[in-house]
Length: 132
Image (tube, rainbow, N blue to C red; front, side):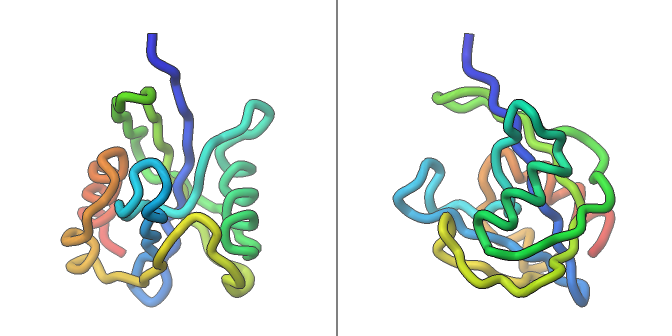
């Protein structure tokens, strides 16, 4: 049986643009775009995990406030990833990036043309359908 990996991603929207993060080339799924976020630890709920991940990855504080409908699953060689996407706001500036080669604020039109990680594709489609 494959390992189950539970992750959370942030839909951070400002001025009708979404913050997209390009995974570092030297990481698993390197070069793909994704929602900022990461693994949910054993003693965390998705909201706690997202706040922690945003702080660890970007040095920024955040407010998490709503879940995007749906849970998104993708099977890889290394395991089955289950993604929950939560809306969040940044409460402070991004002061670092430790797991991404690039951060970009994108419109709905730009978002659909990025090369998203397979797990994130149905989530980005749902988010675009709902509108930024």
